[in-house]
Image 1 (tube, rainbow, N blue to C red):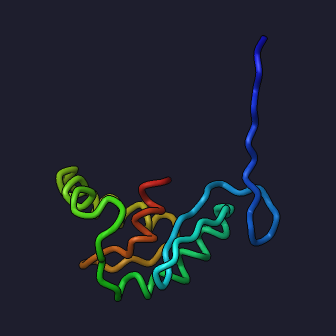
Image 2 (image 1 turned 45 degrees about the horizontal axis):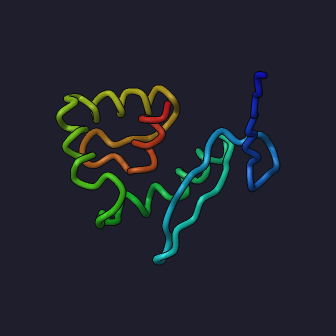
Image 3 (image 1 turned 135 degrees about the vertical axis):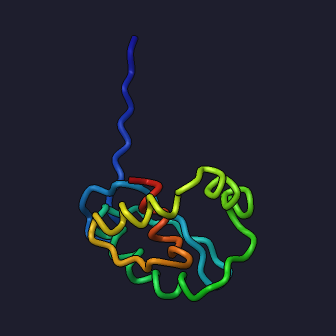
Length: 107
């Protein structure tokens, strides 16, 4: 007997179909929210100035993720090109805000 289980994510803000569950932390508390691509972009845009000015603390992926990104060679160059081509503002130099890098990696 075959069985198919379908899980549908619902956007926690507007009730539309969600594309993924986004996890984040604020003031020591962990949160998860299901969002559509449209609402993920709004969330990332709202956080970008804060993430860009913040310093990273120990957390998910930490140093190993950074090593993996630089070892891949050109990750930030490719990310800048993709982000610009998809309507995001990115500086020519310096760190790309984490929400924008996550958007690039999950494209």
